[in-house]
Image (cartoon, rainbow, N blue to C red; front, top):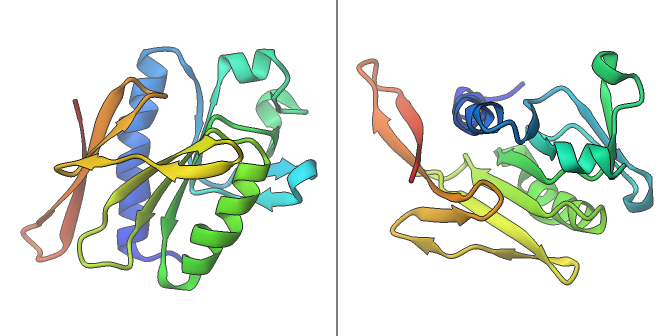
Length: 168
């Protein structure tokens, strides 16, 4: 089971990024529970979320074998998201990072929900390895979506941390 922080962070990113993708007709956003398979990379995993552009589908780089009834995406999405929890630190930062790079996934978004103030990290694939985008006062540029993002926190009335994903 996932913690409230993990689930809330994934939901906030899904609302904001998913809305951008929908409003700008960029492709499809899959928020959890979609299997990602890439045979060449030995990858079979359910990312917390992933984005596939219409162009990737058109070029056959990503395929849904059963169309709208598919439970599996085969190939390389443009981007995957993982929200790190204590039990997944090594998996998300090492194992999946290597497999996603081998699968040719251009962007890898990570949020470490195990630290006091979670921070969004955006990685881009360069020569087969991920390079982290520099943060400017907490803002991280995403060339994929043509804007910068910043994950913020505040304490809600019930004392629980609330997350927001800002864009500019």
